[in-house]
Each structure stands twice: as C-alpha cells, then as structure tokens.
Amino acid sequence: METNLVMEAFKFMILGMGIVFSFLIIMVFALKAQAALIGKFFPEKDNIKTAKKVQPSVATSDTAKKIAAISAVIQHHNNQKG
Image (tube, rainbow, N blue to C red):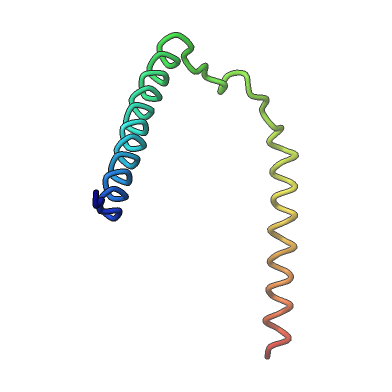
C-alpha cells in the first residue's frame, strides 16, 4: 500500500486553506450585517451642538503671540545668516 505523502499533504493544505477562507468570508459578511444593525438601531449623535466653544479673544491673542514669536525667530535667523 503505497501512499503519496506529497499529495496527501497537498489535500490537507487545500482543505485547511479552504476552511480558513470560508470562515473569513462568513466573518466579513457577519461584521457588515452587525455594522448595519448597529447603525440602524443606534445612530451616531451629532456632537457639534454640545461641544464647548473656546473664547475667541483668548485663542486669537495666544495665536497672535505665537505668530509674532515665530516671525521674530525667523527674522533673527535670517539676520545672522548674512
């Protein structure tokens, strides 16, 4: 009784890869269905209205100070280059 071990290994490889591939395909469809169900029953709420707004005067003055400092550093660097 002579069995070809290479062919047996090839059969097991194809069987194993087929099972894994089938599982992954089923998992993809299950996750898509789950996402659709969650999106339907638990819609995402808009958090734009509930977000706290930063005071524009404080943010503007901080930004202006940063821009002035960066400009001064660039000008100082250019003056030292020659």
